[in-house]
View 1 (cartoon, helix red, strand yellow):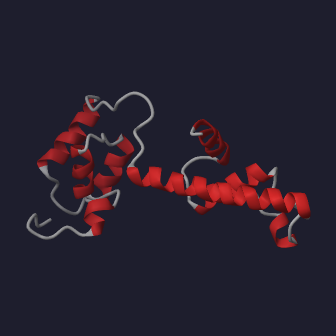
View 2: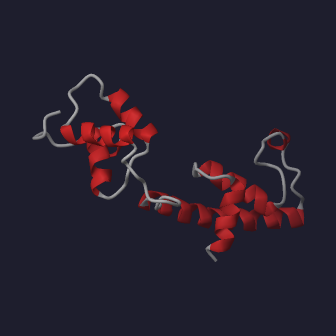
View 3: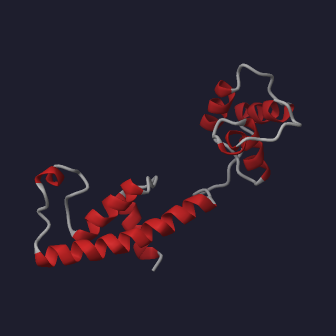
Length: 149
């Protein structure tokens, strides 16, 4: 990789990019062994930088320690969750009103969908976790919504 070349979005944000790995490492994010394996496989056709080889060696020796507990959520994940919460409130109002006026049976095409079951708050949570592709279950989403209030 030419270090003088302007980095592309792929270089900066693709999960298997060496530049992304270095950027995240400099920000204090320690990669998992699975992430290191994916980066190594994706970049096997080119010489690896010394810093990456050292990182892999530390991991293999068991000297690469991640902080205990849940990893800090990245900004983009926080933004997606806030947007999903706003969507959830809108869907919940709509489903609650629909339940009150005409019920939640829905069209025949919807009845078989996994997200079209349960109470209005369950349905709203299922819809937004799917729509926003959140890496949590709809139950976890509801738990977090109730704890963030």
